[in-house]
Length: 159
Image (cartoon, rainbow, N blue to C red; front, side):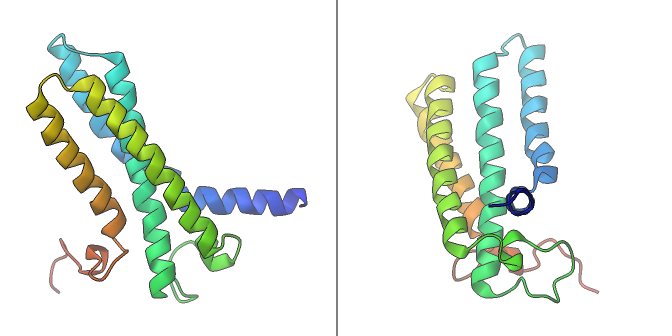
């Protein structure tokens, strides 16, 4: 593999991960951590795991979006915006599927670790596990599945 090919592959994967979207997820954890600190209840380990988990969820959503769009044929040459790695052929559908699986496993490990470390009562654990599973489902079903809500135009104003 040449340096140019490796650079192209790296750029394609970075484009699929969409690093520009990651600060959005980061902001909510920083805000929550600031509030916890203000109440003298800041725990750095929990904050770091929350940052990791929310970033992995955002990446999961981004990868699932690319995967769903590719499977449905939404990302064509007429698509407005930057080409996705799978559109250019640099990333195959099977490679993207494997990246999704790896990301799901990492998100599960991170999320479970966060729940175990942060929750003090069984009711907290159950509540946060439910929210965490819903977050994973939402991240994946944005453009994947029979009724992806990313194509429904939710939140848009009628013309």
